[in-house]
Amino acid sequence: MLKIILTAIFGRAVPVATIRHTPNEPTEHMAGNTFGRLFRLTTFGESHGPALGGVIDGCPAGLLLDLEAIQLELDRRRPGQSAIVTQRKEPDTVVFYSGIFEGKTTGTPIGFAIHNTNQKSGDYSHIKDSYRPSHADYTYDAKYGFRDYRGGGRSSARETASRVVAGAIARQLLAPVRIQAYVSQVGPLQLGKSYEELDLSLTESNPVRCPDPETAKAMEACIREIRKEGDTIGGVVSCVIRNVPPGLGEPVFDKLHAELGKAMLSINAVKGFEYGSGFGGVYMKGSQHNDAFNPDGSTKTNHSGGIQGGISNGMDIYFNVAFKPVATLIQAYETIDKDGNPVTAQGKGRHDPCVVPRAVPIVEAMAALVLADFTLLNRSVKL
Image 1: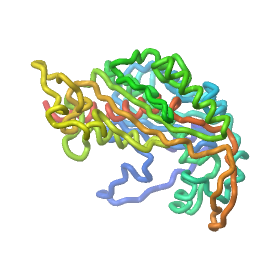
Image 2: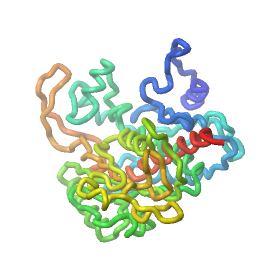
Image 3: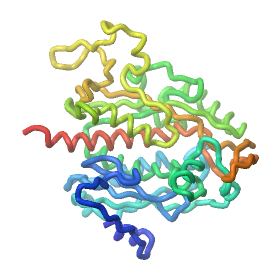
Image 4: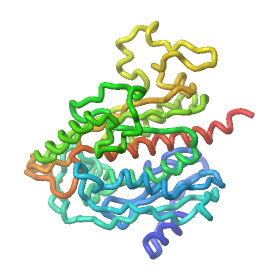
C-alpha cells in the first residue's frame, strides 16, 4: 500500500526497503514515525522534499467526511497566514489517494499528501557543515551519520501538517467531543483567566489566536518587536476538551494523561506539559484539591482535569503546553562545525518569531488522535 501511494505522489516507482523480522519481533513503531495503536498515523516527508504526507490506518468504515473542514484545519496551520509568522508561501492543499470513496471512509488505509511548492533550499547552504544551537543538526548527524540540512529535513515542524490532516479526521470520528486550543501566554504576557472565563469563539479573531482581544493586541505587538530584533520568543498553548465520555484511558502505563503528554511532547519545540491543577496543585492541601462528587457523578471542582486514575471521568479535560523560543535566530551567533571548529553563523530564510499561533491546530490535532485511539480501544473492554 505504501509503495502504491508513493508512486501516485511522485509519479514513478519509489523503492521501499524490505524489512525482515521474526514473527515475535515488534515492528509497529520502528523509527518512531507511527503514532497510535488502533487509530494509527504514519507520516513521511521532509521540509524541502517534494511532499509530506501520511497513511492513516484503523479509521472505521462509513465515516462521512467533511473534506472542507479538513482543509480548513490545514489553513489554520499553514505558513504565510499573517505578518507574525513565517512568510513561506505554501497552499498546503491536501490530496487523498486512498481509503475514501464517495465521501466516506472505506475502512482501508487513508493515504494523503501535501505537496511542497515554495522551498528555498539555498537559504540553508551556509549550515551544511555547521550545527545550529538547539536544533536537531548535531543529534541527527550523531544518530544517522548524515542529515538533510534543508530546513531541518525530517526534524522540521513542517512535518506536523500531516498530523493536522489526521487529527481533522479523528475529530469527525469523535463528534460531539469538542477540542478547543488557544494561546494563553507569549513570553511574559499571560492571559490571567481560566478557559471558563473566556469566550473561546474569539480565538480565531486575531492572528495570535488569543481569545482575549486586549491581551492579543499586546502579544502581537510583542511578537512584532521580537521579529524586528531578529530574535524569537516562546509561549503557552492551552487546550480544553469537552463532552468526553467517562472511561477513556487505561489504568497503568497507558493512562489518558500520559498519552496526551506524549502526544504534546512529540510536537516540535514543546518543552512542558501539565494537565488539571498541574504544578499549581503543589500549593494546595488534599482537602482543597480533592474533587467532591455531585449526585450524578460529576464533580464540584475539577482539579483532576477530567482524568482520574488515568481514565476520563466525564468532566472537561484541560491542559497547558509550553513551547520554547524558535531556535533559528536572524542574527549572528557562535557555534561549531562538524569537525568541532568554532564558527560564526547567522540564520537565513523564513522563520516564525513565535511558534504558538500556528501550534494551536497542531495541539488540537494531537489531542484528537489520542482520544480517537482510546475511543476505539474502549469498544473492546466490555460487553
